[in-house]
Length: 370
Image (tube, rainbow, N blue to C red; front, side, top):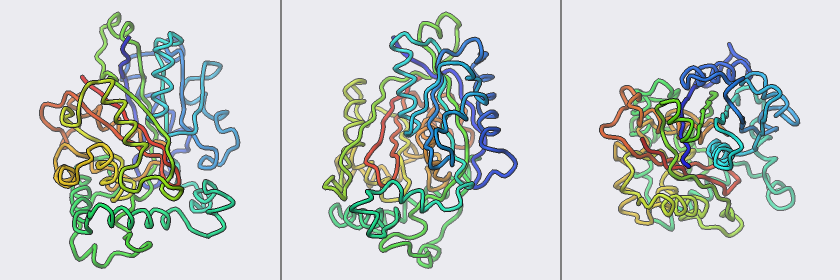
């Protein structure tokens, strides 16, 4: 049995959304997704998955606040504290197991409501060994960035070139809050977060809600519905670099892509579009290195039109748990031919790679086709 994505909806994609609450934003995205799929969630949807983290939400057991606005009241619903692609994986398994014919996945960011983001991020650090050091997430990332650049030979110039490209692409993306024409002088004058990391190397936060509707191939054929199919999906956790994991090729990305590659029988060159996590500029290169393994290919691919045509998180913004769904959203729009000024020619296969962020070594990969 195959599983396809038959509907998508999104709301927001702004640094701060003051006119909608979290629940109202979720409702708007869900309403659009159900209209796109042509379904009534109260009658047709069998399962709902939401990607939430209590600390970001400001609620204990935040899944209690999920059902009403996505049409899941008194229905089968589960909340996973994970990246959006992992959430797709849960819905994917619900359908493959026969538990559901139609499943809904929602993830969102309302991070501007968080008064002190650094405090939330520090709660994820080991309380005995890391938190007492006083390091924040950006400092940890800067240490990994330095080690990655030293071991691979990736230069500051390569990072700058990607930032120029990503920001420029963002000017054409209606969902990008941080698209800009960046000059070398801008980078030279940029604030240093923690050597060697500059302010431009980090994706700024953004807010949005994204909803996808998945269905079994049987339901899709019976109802003559168009779909973007999920050819393979995988997620993985490995050892963080500061506990001995690789700073060159993170295992979570390498392992996830390896499983997708085995399942589909497709190599990296068989995909027409790649949407790669770039929460930090060096992570873009690191993730490419994990799925390619060749430095020259990585540097060459970094400037190609089919790699992060959306501008990535550097241009769109960091959406915390919704980051993975954003990668998938951009792929679906390309596969449907609905990407507007960003549209590439002859797109039939897409690959998205996600990462849950510091301090985790958790990520996912998904292959899509149409």
